[in-house]
Length: 143
Image (cartoon, rainbow, N blue to C red; front, side, top):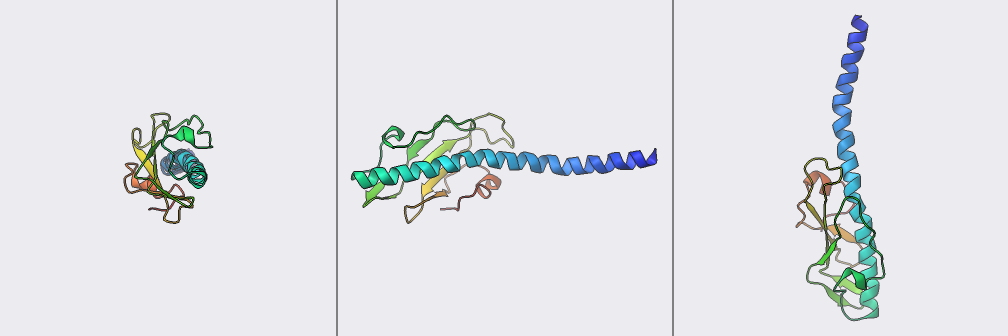
């Protein structure tokens, strides 16, 4: 009987440690949904800039289809964008987290991706309101 009690205590302690870590990792994975879409938008905007002389004014101008996201509202194009020889600078893409399967009160928080200095990728902008534990773990460097 004592052995069963010890086993239950050990299982309880392991669950108390593992469940929050699991929830945190799944929430980070949900936020990373925006990373891949921001990268696609950045590449599409570079192509748009290369064929014209300006940045896209709306997402519909880009040659990429932004899918309906499960965890985010439709992203917005923000920032003072500049286009020169196919290199985009100053552009940011803002994603707002919706309340679907929300953990850690991140609903309504935003993640803002900026185009990096070389115009070849995205980075997490300091204007983001997502918690630091999300921003630091989603696979994109800080701007």
